[in-house]
Image (cartoon, rainbow, N blue to C red; front, side, top):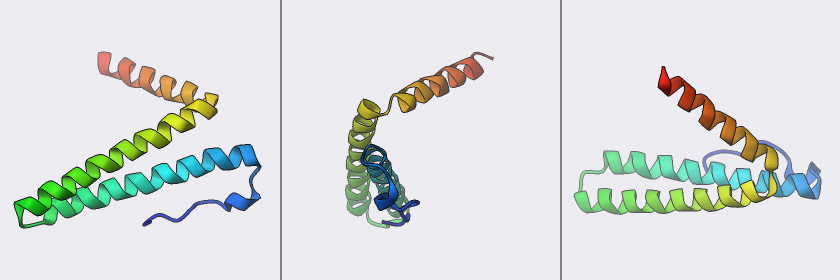
Length: 94
C-alpha cells in the first residue's frame, strides 16, 4: 500500500476500529486505482493498457464494497455524503 495507516488502530474502541479499518481499505483501493490508471497511461502496449484499466475498474468495485459497509455502520458519514451531494447540486445550478 502506498499510503500509510494514519492512526494506530489498536488504540481505538472496537466500534471506531471497524469504521477506520473500512476507511483504510478505501484509501488502499483509491491508491491502487490511481497507480493502475497512471501505469496504463504510461504503458506502450495496448494489451497492457487494457489489462491495467480493467484492474483499476475492479479496484473501484472494491472501493464500493468498503463504502457500502461503512455506510451501514456510520450514520454521520451517510448524512455528510448527502450534504456534499446537495452542495454540489446547488453549485451546479448557478
